[in-house]
Length: 88
Image (tube, rainbow, N blue to C red; front, side, top):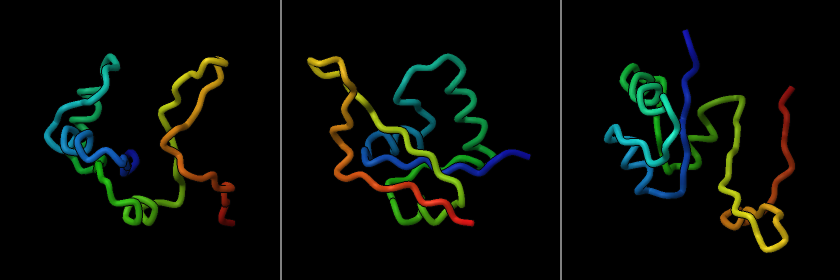
């Protein structure tokens, strides 16, 4: 049981860390969760956008957001916005 997850990042160094069992961020309990799921093949990190998008029917996007002087978050690495598409 469980989900098969493809983790996509544009940062090849982060993907390399994940592929080698390291975790580039700190979150209590995350290292064990990631390692267990990678070991059984339910988690696959990649920098390949096409393969990540082709992987599943449901996709989530999380982007680093850094506060500005106005205290509003920005998404500096997002080059363009896309309208969500829902397949029926």
